[in-house]
Every structure is written in structure tokens, then in C-alpha cells.
Image (cartoon, rainbow, N blue to C red; front, side, top):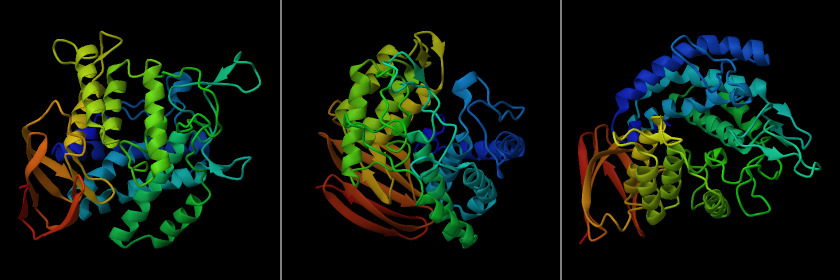
Length: 388
């Protein structure tokens, strides 16, 4: 979460520091993969430190074997925004090692799927069926967040092997395995199902919403997947109606969710709540009213950027979730995937001007509301859009 704003807010050098750290973690991570799971490659769990911790810590909350794959996302995101193939070639062994772990880690489920096991949906619990809500559990297999993580990692490998023109047999193996993964499902109540089965959650308003990873920061749930898109809306509504978002980083996540849902009013409402309820006088993000966790600061920053510019799934979207409370303004230097830099100006709630620059050159599809157009820039070129 701390790296959500790194690329879009034009701080790419911070991602390089993370990449260097992650490369070092693959060494103890390979020991963790082999000794804990009998698997090739490398992985880590949800706590690490300067000494290279990669094993389980913090009890059942720390049983998160797919946090290694999860941490490949900000590394690959740096390539998406910069198109630096030398960088991608350098980190490809790390990406492949993560995928090798997943291939060895997956097991067949009673339904015939290949699934992650153990698994849980941080940090929520579900009532054990048949116990009349007398028992609850956290551990299961293939929680929805794991399905989304694995699919994204496989996307990264497929794209990387194509771009680098390497390792095609490994990519083909990945695609065979992908077909055997379980789908993301919609539960009986119309929300994104949090676990492999439609369990009843113990805490409806839980602060975590890990099963919406596919909405943000990933882009697996979009208007182009209308049933999941609607279910994601219902999922957030259900969480919030039962007290969700009550800590800073959780509220920041909700800002990003609503931005991806292109609901500027709800995004703004939650930005205001983040500042009013979860921000200390010195602007530190607050958890449980006094505990500082910087996640909410970075996540909130990313959420504001996400209301102004989005660039997932091959489209640059200008002012996709602009709140009415910001009728006029401008922002300079935001970055879009594909190596583009954007300056955006608006007045009376409408886009007036956009300047899109590209250091390396390239093509992109651009959208503003219902207006759609394509740009094709030479290295160092820029495109100026004027809305008359």
C-alpha cells in the first residue's frame, strides 16, 4: 500500500529501492519456500525486516504464503509506467521465482480446482457451517484474494515473456495451470464472495476488504466485467453499513475503490472521513485514534490521484471520478502507464485542457467521459487536448 502512489505520483525512484530490497529477500525467501512448503522459487509472509525475515510471524494472521507474489505487483508496475525493458529483464528472475513457487504450492481441491492451501482472507473469519455460529475459523483454501493474486502474477509472467521474447515454454505452462484455477464468485447476497465457499463472515464490517484486490490496485473488476463490478459496489456498501473503514488505511482503501467505481462523490466523502476521523493534527494517519500507520497517508494520496487520472487495461482516463467539491483546479506531472506524463486542467467540473507527454514515445487510448481518442507520440513529443 505504501507504493500505491509511487508511479502515478511520479516518484519512480522509490520503486527501484523496493526492487533492490525484494531481490535480497529472494535468498531467505527460497529457504522459506523449500522448508515450509517443499516448493521451488521463493516466497515471504506478511512481516519482514532489514534482516530478511520471510517466514510466518504473528500467529494465524501471518499465514499468508502468497505475499511474495503480492509483492511482485509494485515491481512490475514500475515497468508498466516506465516501459524500461532493461529493468524488466533484470527483475524477471525474481518474477519467475515467485511463479515457480506458486506452481509447486498449488494443490487439487475437492471441486477439482488447483488452489492455494493454507489460505485466509486477512484478517476476517467465517462461521463454520453446521455449528449454529458457535465456531468460527480463519484458515481455508483458496480465499478470493489468493485467486486474484495468482491470476495477476500469471498475467505478469505472460506479459514479461512476450515483451522480453524469452521463456515461452514457461509462459505456456502458466496458461495451462491458469485454466484450472477457481473463479472469483458472487455470493448469494450479491457481494464478491470472500472465500472459496459462500461462508457467512463473522464480522460484516471488517476493516479488511482483501477480496476487492481485483478492483484496486489490480484491474480485474472493471466496467467491462459488469456483474463483478456491481457485486464490488454491493460489497463496499455492505462493509460500510456495518462500520467498515474505521481505521485510516482501510478508509484510504475505500477512497481508491470508489475512484475505480468512478464514483467521485463517494470517493470525496471518504477522503473527508479519512482526514476528519483518521488523521492526527500533525497529518499522520491514525489507527485506533492514536496509533500511527503510514499506510493511510500513502493510500489516501493514491486515492486522490486515482480520482484525477487512471490508466489501467490500456486506457488513459482523464478525471474519471472528479468530485463536485473540486469544481476547478489543475494537477501537473501525474504519470500514466505506458510512459506518459499528464498535466490536467478543469473548470466548472469539466476538463478544459490536458497535456500528455511521452519521453520514449508511444500510442495510447484516451478517454474523457464519453469522448474517446487515440494519441501517437514520438520520443519527447506531447499532445495537447483542448475541450471547447
